[in-house]
Length: 147
Image (cartoon, rainbow, N blue to C red):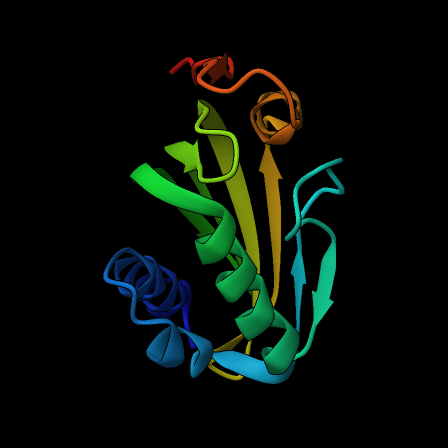
């Protein structure tokens, strides 16, 4: 695949995520794919997820723990087998009732037309504050992305 096809694969995957079509999203991943999230205290889906079954479990845990309020890919850059996407998201943590905003960067490695690895970089402090048990209703705000 060329860089334009890689970009299209990733952007179509975001559309599937936003539509809740996780089975079709997972079809775009290799069976042995890696999904890497930062380790964050109190966040049940953080860490490394190896293989399609573990990635499916990640999405189930994410859905159980949080509701996406806003998810906006902003810029997409592709070079060789890499696709990098910047964006912003807002989340509602179901258990605490807190919301938080977080800029993010996603790095995809594409192999033979499918995602071989995904790595997420985001504001872990805002997420940790929102998931931390304690005073419900507080807003945990991440730093806005500056363009």
